[in-house]
Figure 1 (cartoon, rainbow, N blue to C red):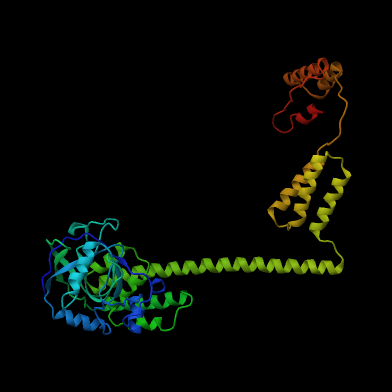
Figure 2 (tube, rainbow, N blue to C red; figure 1 turned 90 degrees about the vertical axis):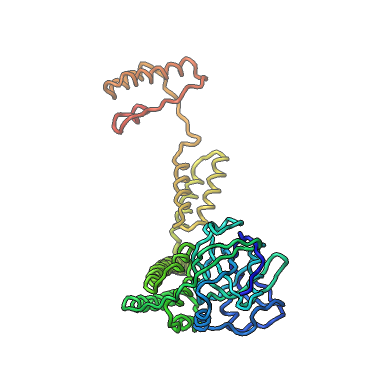
Length: 429
């Protein structure tokens, strides 16, 4: 493999935009298969691979012809993991990452190693900032969208483990060991594989508007490892979980991890469906009650019966007309009555307004009485009707004495406090 000029790298790439957000380019031709798997149309003047992408099995066989230890450019990734057997679109923008991609495309194999960063916010990365288990990928498409940014499509081929990071001036480079593709068999592996297929069918049944053929896309994959890797790219897994799946060395470990993740996703889908069903049931119930209420109003109208809500409003209106109120109070009461008339009886504000209006009607507006300030009479009544309570009776007599001496003075308001049944109301009278 040809040697490139050395650069040091500390960059991270992000997944490419979905096809709906991409700007179509007239140059080049992408097969329907590439459009489906890439998720973005990567086509341009710089097309690395014009032929259809090779199948996973072919890639595995091809890589078996390569040395088990290779020295390759490294492409750091943020918040994403590329799996073997999976095609992934990537947007490359950091200078050293761009240099790594350009170095890879000048070789015959177009090999590149993708490693995920520990901290996705870090721009300048070294070997210590990267996971040491990654993926050997082949670049299949490349498009330079600007001087600083390129889009690439990569096909994951095999897992690799970093043996050492090599000094390079322009990009990050590493000596990696090609890890064997897991091929262990056993009853547990078969059971986990079948359980995952069952969970896939269950999850598809819980999802709305699933296109035809999606189920076949998964069930037709005979390799359970590749199936798990493809599922990992679709599930809403965080980077740590994806990396844990990539680092699993056996089929049993990989399927165990994927079975746990997929089981949780199915449980989430079931809860979401339950919530949606309950919300729909509540909406249907409210709509049914509204329709029945409207029908009841129509029937009452035909029978000449007055609606209960309207009868209550009319009763309050008659009471308001009969009572003598200050003009300001009457305007406020009539305004609230009009509000109440427009509200359904089930509304919370309906009962609040009714209680407020009844309270207004109970108050003694424009009603006055003549005060009896005869202290001897007051003392006699208090002694006859109330035993003890000397402090309270003395305070009442003091209050009356002040009013008698200064009728125009603003006297304080007496407040009687105590448990029920001790005579607060009778004292006030």
